[in-house]
Length: 137
Image 1 (cartoon, helix red, strand yellow):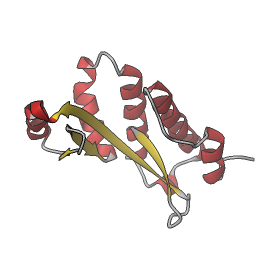
Image 2: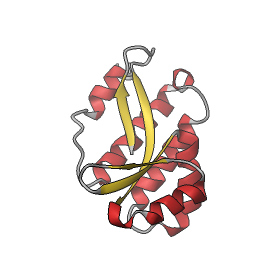
Image 3: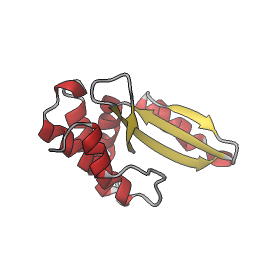
């Protein structure tokens, strides 16, 4: 996921959050523990619906894991490629120092990921995010 979170305590008014989420029935969660041990990052949580999830947050962590896994990804290639590109941009410098072109590209990438996913509860439009970031004329 590449989430765009509203933030009133930042100059740009938003924060980008990169996350990899892997889910498994809690009765068969051992592979998630193994993956966490192999990567050395992320956290596991058991949900009340019997699902265990492994979450890996942060641009550098997500970039590292996706870059290592990319040759093996077969069903989420579009999302992985978009997230890799976004994390490369976002990990280079603070959001305040990104150019207008870079910010627009990150927003575009977030919507690529969103549109490729099965379901998204987000009510943001790309235009609304552009406006919040001051990227509209």
